[in-house]
Every structure is written in C-alpha cells, then in structure tokens.
Image: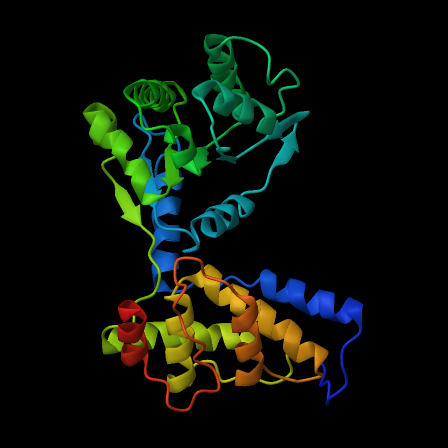
Amino acid sequence: MQQKFKNLNGISVAFDELKLRKEHLKKIIIEHPRYKRIYNLISECHLLSVGSVEPGTLFLYGGTGVGKSTLLKEYTQNFPRFVLDGVTNVPVLFVSVPVGATPKSVASEFLLSLGDPNYEKGSQTSLDSRVFQFIERCGVQLVIIDEFQHLIDRDTKHVLNRASDWVKVLTEKAKVPIILCGMPESEKIFLHNEQLGRRFSVREELTSFNYDTREDKKDFRTFLYILDKQLPFSKQSNLADPKLAEKLYYVTNGVPSYIKTILELSTVHALKNGQDYIDEGNLYEAFISMKVSKRPNMVNPFCDKKFNLYQAVENEGRK
C-alpha cells in the first residue's frame, strides 16, 4: 500500500519529518522491465538448481549506479535467514568483495557471513574447506558474490590465475548455483580462463536507460512516472513531462542512482520550503550541489525554457 503524506501548505517540515521522508525516498525501488528481467533470471538460476546435479551459474555486470547491488540485495532479502533445530539457515548467501581482496580474504567473508567465529583463522585450504562445510550446514541454496571486480583489481597473470582457480573450485565443490556480479571489466577473467568462461556462459548486462528511440523515451518516462508516484509528497511533481524528462536524462544519463541522488537533494530543498511537490527551482538548486566529475562542462538545464537535449550534448562535447 502506498504511503500518504500530509499537505505542507508552505510550512517547512520539522527535522524528524524531513528525515522520515528522505528515508522513504531512499528505500524506493522501481522494478522497471529490465530490472524485472534480470531478477527473473536470478530466480531461475536459483530455484531451477535446487536439487540439480549441475547447479547453474550467472555473470551479471554493469556500470556504476545501474542498480546491480540493489537488485541482488532485494533478492537476498526475499529469502530471509531462519533458525531450524538450533542452526541458522541461509537460503541465499550474499557476499560483497572488499577492495584489494584475495581468495583467502573472500573465503573469510563467506565464513563471517555464515557465522563461523574463527572466520579469519587458517590457511587458504582450511578456510575453503570450512566454507563448503558451512554452505551445506546452513542450507545455502544460492551464492551471490557482488563487487567481483575487486578480486581481480590488479591486472596481473598471477592475480587472474589465483582468482579464476578459486572461483572454479567454488563452483565445483559448493554444489549450489553461483552468481558473480561486477563491473564490465571483470569479464576479463573469463578471457583469461576459457574453462571458467564456459562455466559462466550465461552473462547478462544491467544497463542505464537510453533516450534514442521513441520506445527508449517511453521507458524512461514510465520509470519517472512510477517514481514520482512514490515520492514523499502529497502531490505529484510531473517528472514524466516530456521537457522535464529530457532535462533529467541529460543530467543523469539515465543512470538510476544519479536520478535518485538529484531527487533526494531536490526533495530536501522542497520540504524545507514547505512545498508539496518538487519543482524545477528545486532541481536547479540540486544540480548546483550535485557534481559529476566526468562531465565538467555539463550545463544546468533546469529553469531553462530554451533547453534542447541534443544541442546541449553537442555543445558539451565541443568544450
């Protein structure tokens, strides 16, 4: 059921109400078609592998901010842990690889998440052996490894050899489906190790929105419309208006996390003003606060009645 928010009628919200509404926005997840498609692939990889003699694998990749981790965490939360006969069952094991990780440190992360009090103790062989024991003991049905690129940050033959060998052993001995998720460059591990590449032959990319065709524009505006309906205001902000959608696309390049960022900033600005919806003035101020380091020549499109997306992109490229 969609939460309703009271009218502010020009009265600035109290701090607690401001925090509550901002948190509401942060928790919004829009399950747009491409999001749902990847979610369903994860579900198939998981559920069709239960009891299978050959569990499935999946490599999910995409750029920063497209929603990979959000999707994986949502899937994990839909299969919560539970205690049975004194043992914590972990249907879906989600592990995020830290920066500069090694196979040994990732094995420790597995054990920590599975409740091993001695998760840091032992050799690589000992840690791996306990990982497989805990996977069986805790009833793990699916392993998800996020931020996989951190396991191969250093592009050397030695690092790639160790990482690919470890993942290969994991897929052989865990006896559950494995999903790897990371930046596009992490795909290089499959070029380095063809056998591993064959095991992870199913690969899917989660992308940002495009704005080229009529269908692209419809998809993006539909996303904005659904998002608008869930914003923490009593009235809608008309984000899907063709002109405003064009400006939002220009600023964010269709990357969901950037869209959420500018809307968070705009929401706070609007609520402090006692507004019941976001207007272009709020977006204008939010843009000033929002820095996109890769686009130093980007102009502020909000409150500009003459803004033209294609002209702005062309001008930005010339500078």
